[in-house]
Amino acid sequence: MMIQPLSPASTVGEAAAYLRATGERVAVVMRGGRPVGLVSAEPVHEAVRSGDSDALVQSMMDFVAVPIPPGAGGDRVREAFSRAASDWLRSTGRSSRHHDRGPRPR
Image (cartoon, rainbow, N blue to C red):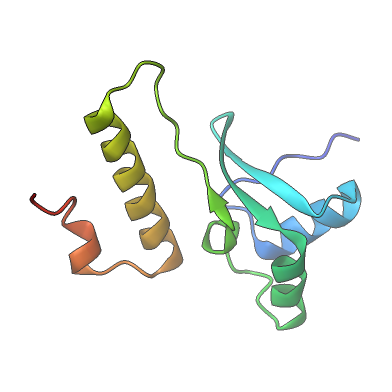
């Protein structure tokens, strides 16, 4: 039986089942065949115990992956980090108008 990888839209309950089935302490969260983050067993299982099984994995990712194209210059790298941070803030409900404005002027 093949276990489906976790996606940002997977529920915490699905993540807990995945982690139990694989015996792993950390799972890679994938979108479109690319890693977008990591989620750890301890906070996932704690969320299940507190009744948050329906929460989305994207709201619990410990680390967020930032895809950087090979040879990208400083501006493209900063844009990629800024976009990843904004996406993560929105997905966790921590976004505000200040965060959505983009990079601050220098």
